[in-house]
Amino acid sequence: MSATRDAVVQMWPRGLSTRGPRLGFLGLGWIGRARMQSLVEARVAQVVAVADTDPALLREAAPSARVHACESLAELLGERLDGVVIATPRALHAAQASLALEHGCSVFCQKPLAPNAAEAARVVATARARDRLLGVDFSYRYVQGLAALRERILNGELGELYAVDLTFHNAYGPDKDGFHDVARSGGGCVMDLGVHLIDLALWMTGSTRALDLDAQLYRQGKRLRPQLGETEDYASVQCRLDSGACMRMTCSWRLPAGADALIEASFYGTRGGASLRNVAGSFYDFTLDRHEGALCWRIASPPDAWGGRALVAWARELSRGGRFDEEAHRFVDVAAVVDGIYGR
Image (cartoon, rainbow, N blue to C red; front, top):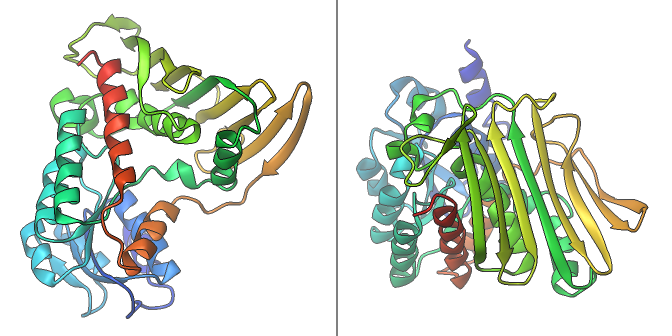
């Protein structure tokens, strides 16, 4: 049995849920399968249909007669669904999300929702017009302790927030050609990794815009100029958030960082600070610490299975009859900052 099939079969450890909203999965690559496994284990929704252009993945991901294998989004939408989970290549996200919403389905989409703010705004407008729940997999929001820290920041526990420092370095970089084609990817490491950091910065601080933005983008050591014809593998960004804090962000692919990954989000205010940091180069294990001067105490530490929580939370809201949430406009705010970095 192949490693792929092993991973998919483990998706159904306790059988399929027969309660909750009826969901279809579009895209069965590793992220789609991982999110499906999280949903099945949480037992908050029914997975009734899956779709992918790869017949082998379809066979592996539909082990039960109750899970229909579809060859296209159009066929998937014929399955009387309450919602669609989209985990396809990023160039397809906006069009597929809009089509599902227009069909009357709520949507949970992998990031980015769209390649630019204008297209993201159109998707959000469609969700609002159809009164459907729209979610994007900004999964780092769900790392243990971050939601409580956000409330403390917004309530002034750190005092006046004046600095946000963000880092996401991946020593490897993506191995699929689509990530390196601007027309299909919309951008490089900022679109792939930095978008998570931008979302965290806006969400944690209650900001909506980045002002006085200065971005330096590089590819293999060569400075890139807007409008980009190539994908960047290193980015350094500095700006002022409309909440008042200075934000500094660096992200990269294939940086010789001495570890598989370096990930950090730190927040500094007049009464103290807090930092989310990955452990020993891990992409999945994080510590969350609170600081006052030279003092430091731990808020949260691994193990923490946070990866699928955004989808599970969306499914739970959908099961409660979830309709359009005005918070979806934040997805447009994130896309607008990305546009600014790329000089669009």
